View 1 (cartoon, rainbow, N blue to C red):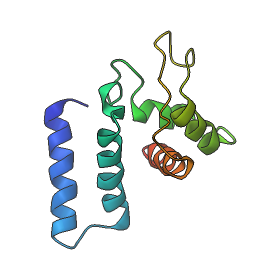
View 2: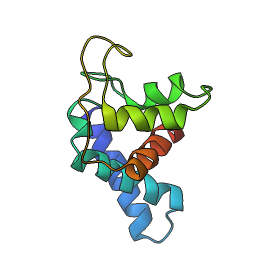
View 3: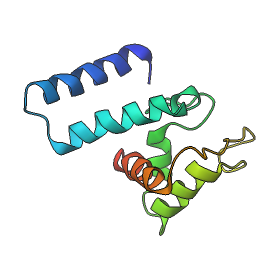
Length: 112
């Protein structure tokens, strides 16, 4: 996602929450996006644009009908890996708890 589109998405989510019209989903989007940003996920990923790592949209679509996708993604988030999306390794994120990784995986999967 380009920075202009990302800013619009942030502003829209913030407006919905501030106006009291935001659903739990909009609040969750803003919260999880903030979590991903604060844990440096966005250094390699974006919501809709592939650059160093796959976009979260691409991940959501690839795993849409995979049994156990939630636990697979949560494990990848914590342990890292290489070879699934190309040669660039994803580093381990040991500072993220397994509950946080599951929440992040759920959010990513909800983007499809």
